[in-house]
Image (cartoon, rainbow, N blue to C red; front, side, top):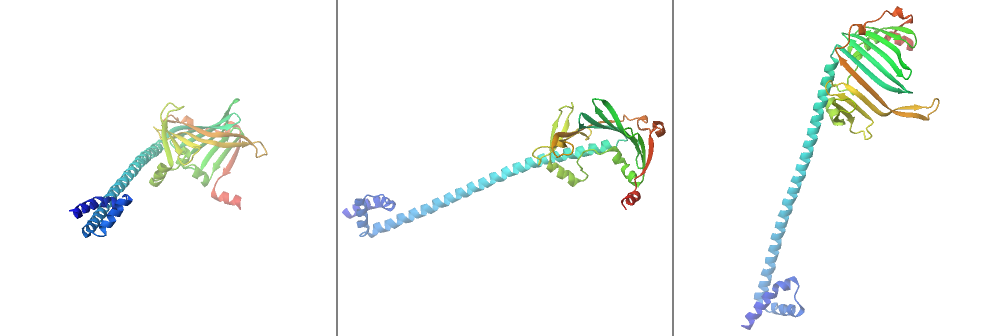
Length: 321
């Protein structure tokens, strides 16, 4: 009976013995008993085995939970990446659609056989350069004017007909009439050249539209014009030096800005006199040009010196030889 009671006491202490939390007397008692009792030795091994199995099971559960947590984390990351990719794709698709629409409208506008275009640029020293272009049924006139506090000065007026090899330049400043002819002149008299381009950046293919949609940022505004237009910028240009305003209705540029694009120096030095933005503004109207607007005047009525110039590939080669 005493032996059984001692076994029960020792077996109650085995967990503490394994964990190493028994005091010296209890530990000594357990060890002395274990050295003599096979049953308690067996019970000790069973307890150790159970604990080992429990540890293994707990480890498996922990590993399983970690695996579930890891999968959940990966899933969350993939979902986040998917959302970001979807947002990026939607923005990219939106820009691609806008650019395609702009190009389509610009091309359609330039198909017109009757339009007026005016571009103005501040050239410095209180002067603004204005170029007025009239186009009707293949006939073209371009007037170059300078505006200042002294008024308006017409520098030159040019006349041409699409796909011909002749061009007339009346230079009011030089008091000359220059009659150009030749195959090189014909190249500059193509319909697309005389009408002038639309957007300042070239988009002539599907791949170019894709690339432009990736490079450019697009926003809308109404500032200083009174109607909505697109503001196009190069999103990789951190200082936003360049931007172009494009009319939503026609796809034609309204303003091109190159900040700090003009640098002037004091004569004969490299010392900077002035740095200013290079801003070109455009105005358009369609169906407003009359036959009188593009009619070539009697060049003899000006009383200017008449000069003939040949602009041909052959003449160019002779001049260079």
